[in-house]
Image 1 (cartoon, rainbow, N blue to C red):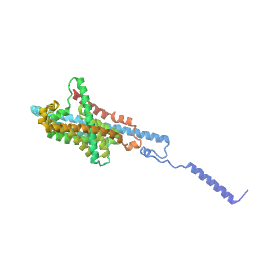
Image 2 (image 1 turned 90 degrees about the horizontal axis):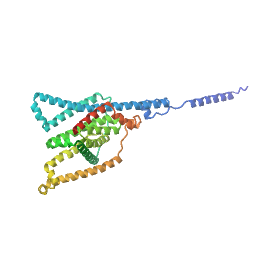
Image 3 (image 1 turned 30 degrees about the vertical axis):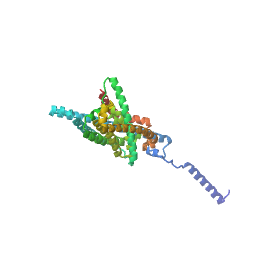
Image 4 (image 1 turned 90 degrees about the vertical axis):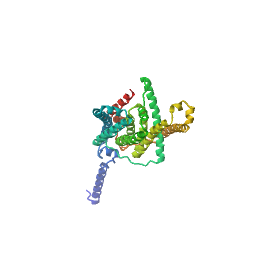
Length: 392
């Protein structure tokens, strides 16, 4: 038996070293969690199976939030229409009880129709929808978009693109209503043209150029896009633009309003400033409504179309102004279409935070959740009913 203490110490140290090695092999650093896993509530010591389960559960929960949020927004849009028409009938009914003849006389006045429709929609309808969304803020919370400046040059380019989109949509709408007119065997009138032809220029400026752009941008961009954005830019742009078109209530305006809505929603998402889209909307309405009405009062379009030389030479200045305006419109339309094609290649949609972390359902599934829910279906049916009845 060897009593050498060095040997015993050596053996002891060797054993101790082995114990340390064994412990070092057993102990492992916890894996670093990704932002996606942190957001999904994954813990460091979860197994791969548990991690995957929690992530899938989080995606499903966010999908449910998408459906609830868009259902609330759909019901808000339906409330605008329901309250607007209900208050119109109520006001007319009360007036008829008080004085039926006066009521019938007022209903033939375009200024009264404009005031009635504006007050009932802008005050009662949209006011009710705002209160509804405020009460259900937790189900459809608004996002805070980052504000960015837009130079006048870029704003002007966007304006030209907007003109291109609008005039292209107008052509599509004209062709569509022409086909419907043939099928029905009767002409389908454009309600906007009929309304503008009977409105004084001052009322057109107030209602169409000033009030409508401000209110519509606050509703279809600020109110809707802010609440749709957290679930993806694609849904926010397409669905807000779709309802912007549907709310015009007829197929003559639907196509160009829808295409214009896509541009305006994109601009709002990129700048976070509603003033830019209001300015574009006002300019579009000014050039598309007030200017044509001024031109039709200055010249006789039937005589110009018939190439009445005597009339043309006797009214040369206004005729030249009308021709210059017409050429300008065509030039802007072509330039707008070209710039729009460039725009499609240059600009891409950004991913929202939940998309970047992979915690939202896939794009196609998300669009289904956005559209196929109780609120959206009710508002879609309501709008389509109004548009179809406008053809009859």
